[in-house]
Image 1 (cartoon, helix red, strand yellow):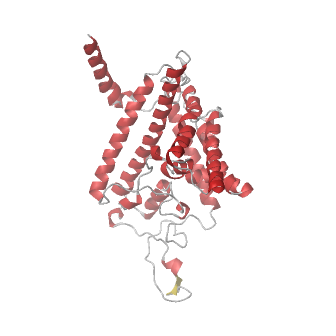
Image 2 (cartoon, one colour):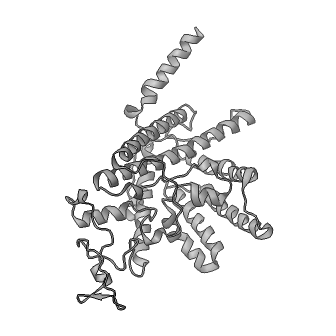
Image 3 (cartoon, rainbow, N blue to C red):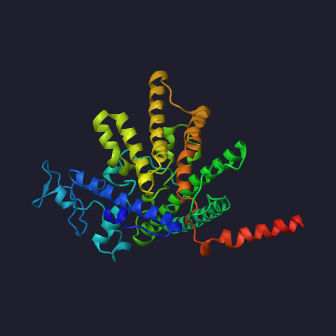
Length: 371
């Protein structure tokens, strides 16, 4: 944390790099705290105790004895590692496989801290070859979408520069001003969504393609967030759950200890807000306010269920969710834009097919059509 906040990338156009570097540090600290406070360490599903560092996997021994002792060893000792290595990964030492597992286990799939996690339905073939090809195509598609949206940002005055500017352009009349701000906010959300998909695609290609892990261990990271009909559905299922455990560590558990379930919700969203504010080296509290209000909305949904016996849902639930995310959310995006994060480096120009080829071609055709 000292190195993260004391040392800084000086070039203002690299604010997004600074953002990513700080985010990574906070995640590492959160995971370290989580592992430290886990009484018996973090275990994979099926493990009874931690395997030895760098130790090889051992098969579980069925003894049939009440005390679980076989050949002088307990079942736990005989099964020090619940997931034997795939023959394809034999070239990698055990410590490398274990380290890779724990680095990429953000959602807790296959681990004890993933209990209760919603896992989106898989649509890809689970055969290794087709799975890897589909994931590689997904990576390319997500990259192109981000490239197009990033090009859109560059066309907006001030917002598209690293110096930053408000998404609410004062020179516009109210209606076009808020139409544009809504478009910028929506595009920002899509960049975050497709960016998380890219991260998951890269991790999936490494886990399955390099380490030989089971494709079933790498389900999609998100589930069509635009179909959410409640805030609980949106934040608890459809939006990515990559940072779920980190926010529980930094705020949810403390809040739950102090005031129960309500504290867990508000503590988690407060931690999320501080993560997105401090992680960007900002002092714009509208960012934290946005996330905290999402927790308030979820609590209100719980009160509605208690009062009526019905869950928030349907068309009214979709409108409710859209208001919290698409309308209130603009205060957070405005904070990011003013600090130059939206106009900062997202896709480098040499790697932008849209800015190098598609946009010039579109401009040429438009001029030709007008003439």
